Length: 92
Ligand SMILES: [Zn+2]
Image 1: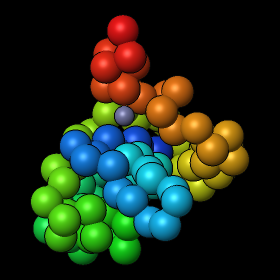
Image 2: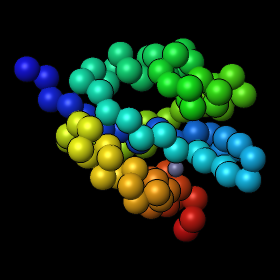
Image 3: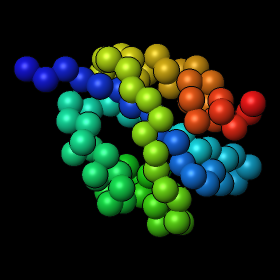
């Protein structure tokens, strides 16, 4: 049986909605290559669909072992940037 993987996508351009901007998406899947292909095709989730429509590219920043519980634990912290190796590089 496949193990679930939680993943972090980093957007090349932040998505701006009202006063919020966000350039990360956290999700989980049992089939990461297929899930990433869907995101890149603009079919994975509303958030990444809009990002792709606006010309953002999506980059897989990192993954964790675990499914929904891991995803929820990371999302609750509301600071995906902290987990993102790409953003950390930009901040240096
Ligand atoms: Zn990032």
